Length: 240
Image (cartoon, rainbow, N blue to C red; front, side):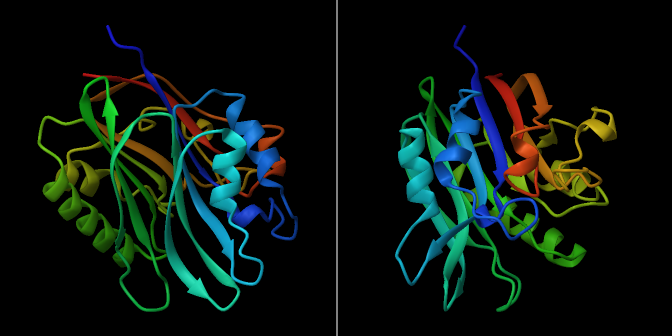
């Protein structure tokens, strides 16, 4: 039997820490992530500075010693931010899809096609909008992406910050994408990811298709409570 892969999703809040005023070094953040030996990490809110040219995605990838793939979503005068996926698996395809619903709140779905033990693994790294209509519209956009790139029998992983504090997306994701929430049966107190110091909302998720979780959990306590306002989720996954 093939070995499982360990996948993580983590909103790093542009390195501003849990209070929004800190300056968290990417090597420190990468060190915390590497301690769990992931094969695949999906980061959200990763910043690139226009003035200095410094790239948090580049720093993360270098500190982790792994290839990184970045998709810019929101552009401002100070720079831009988006999603970054870092992986030790072989990457066959990479694209960033604009799933924005308006010109102000820009959102993207960062897509990677990976080689998972000789079969494709389709990975989508997302950070969805702040209102219900946006999120449901963006899920329909993700469903259309999947219809174009993946076969029905292919393993799929969709993860990131869904901003879905009311838990309304599980059903449309199951119906339109045929994916299930790895944490759906966990007690609510074990899957709340925001705020990192006192979690009250389950904003971050991992959804899968044709993948089985051997272990899925939230990482909490230090150092996570001091690195971002979100807590990461991590899971060991087997293809089915």
